Amino acid sequence: MGRRILLCGLTLFFLCAAGCSAGKKAGDSGNSDREQSELEASENLIVVGVSQIGAESDWRNACTKSIKTSLTRENGFYLIFDDAQQKQENQIKAVRNFILQEVDYIVLCPIVETGWDAVLQEARDAGIPVVVADRQVDVDEDLYTCWVGADFRKEGETAGGWLAEELERQGREDEEIRLVTLQGTVGASAQIGRTEGFARVLKEHENWKMLEMASGDFTQAKGEEVMGEFLKKYDDIDVVICENDNMAFGAVDAIKAAGKTCGPSGEIMVLSFDAVSAAFEAMIDGDINAAFECNPLLGPKIREILDILSSGGTVDKIQYMEETYFDTSMDLENILKTRMY
Ligand code: GZL
Image 1 (cartoon, rainbow, N blue to C red):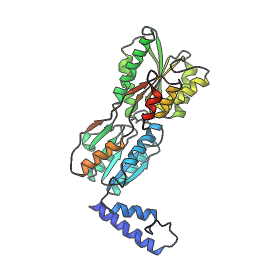
Image 2: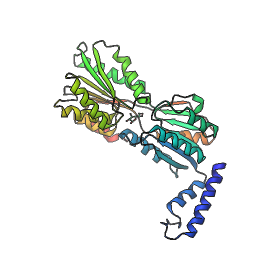
Image 3: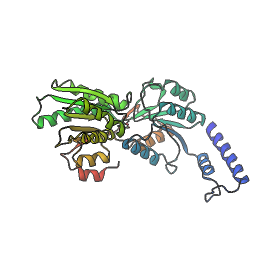
Image 4: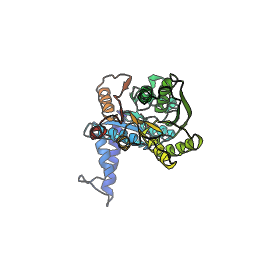
């Protein structure tokens, strides 16, 4: 109730201000874009504050687009969106601002799993339900209403299982296989889960040697830099595990810059996570062997959750997204035509 009064008060303030000042960029209604937004917010829209990590990867941009095209005014939402530029402190500030603005719901896409206890307790004390999306938070589960995202450990295990089958197909099941890993942002659920999931398969193959793992922070530039360092240290890498597509693209650039080859017909196998459209193109180009999907289209699921909650319903605490994997044995050109990100 407080929020509605607050927004109506803001609306009245902006309308008075609009009446006294000339030269504002006016829409059809004669109000500035800002006044229009405040007016809209005073309708019976569900006001949602979304704290997004940043724009570090193709996956993240697809996730943001999905959220923005789902939580629209037409669908009954007033969206307040914050891009944290990949800094947890910015996410914490954004959540505190959402609390001050008395939003109806908060959606948090947490950059790492830890450091959220205090601010989520503040949201709970303010009576604002929190939906955690994408990566997870390591807090008392009473501090958030539900989580929706991917099963990262399963993704890692699927990648390990795929590699074992591929090596067997090549007749290399008993050969010493030397691997390196480009990890995502350290402490992010996607990094923790993919590393742990692949490690479960790694320990089943004593002929697989993990030479080194280091973080490329889910970015292409850092991925290229770290892979370049690996290539200087190790001259016989057989496989690079990239915990997202953008680091895989960087790894491919580093491999080529070192005068080596990669992909299904190259010296170094490249396995990637996310399976965005650019990863399909890289597989079609012969640079990447396989991409393990992580579905970024969280918007419709978040919308469904918020609609249920705002009508007094309850939702499951943990909600997994559907996902699979793709490799160069598949009809990738035709599959690519069906991809939404
Ligand atoms: C996975 C997501 C990861 C992606 C990266 O759910 O958190 O963050 O794999 C993105 O591309 O940066």
